[in-house]
Length: 196
Image 1: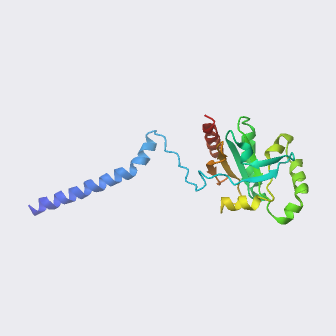
Image 2 (image 1 turned 120 degrees about the vertical axis):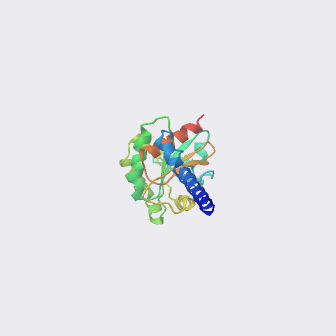
Image 3 (image 1 turned 135 degrees about the horizontal axis):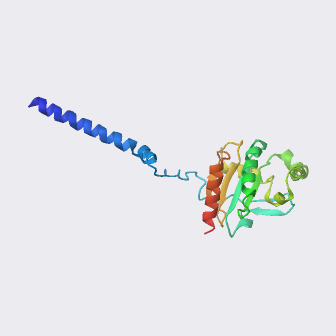
């Protein structure tokens, strides 16, 4: 009798352990059975916040007011927080230029006082390295650059900070982990989703 009870208790523990193992393995089994994994959710604290207001001349020497001038439709913004983030921004821009329906701007942050004194020279250097169709898409921030950089906090300054704004200038998609084809495709899907 005692042996039978002990055996029943052991069987119950094994059944419980098997249930736990099955529950833990279920997501892996679902992927193995061909079901698509659930995409990661947007968890950035910036989602739902208004892009900080800033004004600056683009490389065509026209003043742009960010984000007010972009109202009426989505806009993809690449904030380049340092010279070191330019190679990453270049990969984003190559991808986006191949998609003429996507409106985008690169916003280099050049916030030092010395740079502000030399902005004419710096902008000329940037113009010299870019095709003319990009001049209106590059809006260097000198005066407002520090405030914009502070808004985004402590992300790496070695990569571009990519985001999609809605028609009101609210951030609806954000990544600061560097360019990848799948990340850029995800950004364009978020952009297209705001167009419908």
